[in-house]
Image (tube, rainbow, N blue to C red; front, top):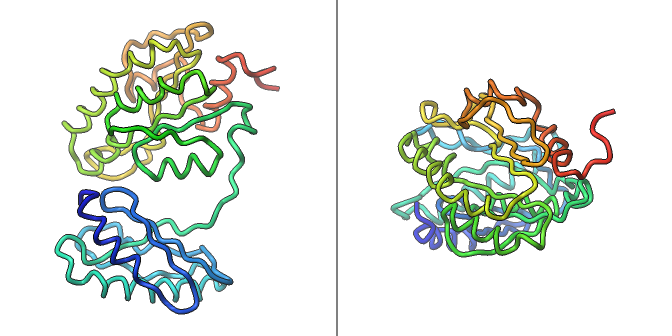
Length: 275
């Protein structure tokens, strides 16, 4: 559902309230929206309502702990009222809720790594995650990789670390659109000289998970990881970037939590690497 078609539906959901709590609804992008419930003694230990199958009815909210039973009941009340409010909508007359949570109290990125950090992203969820760790979220026009890279270039001198998120590779993978996914990667390749012209000390290219077109969902496969640092990197023999090439590369396979120490070391921002 395009964002412009989802907005009127979200407006209807904003009007849905239930006794005992305050409910706020806000649009995200395309078919996604967010629900915030405020009140006393709420608990986020709740199971998603998404059955993860097409053509299967949404599940009821289920409490994962005894303390969350009241919250589950409140959300089920709200969902029932919300479904009634949008029952006549031709594009979306139902909904699923995923990712129940409270503020996780994540460490501040700037304080953890002594880096002033910014986020350049199209999709709102990644802007939200970046805010949770204290990154500045950069506003810009456009939705393509070239637009994101141009936004990064405009703020380049003001930050030590810039996180740029490309969403559409994941979207195309979930749609099973192999050619579309290839096209997104090609757009990144075409725009990459914009970043290289800025002469970064370190450039990392990776993903948070695999989304194979064949599976149309997130998977367990290791993600490729590229680290380019012209002053310090020990080049391997790989001349391509992909899962197989990275598996044979000099970095091998390693836990994702080691990515930042590697980047800091190559940037000359660690007093000492290792013990």
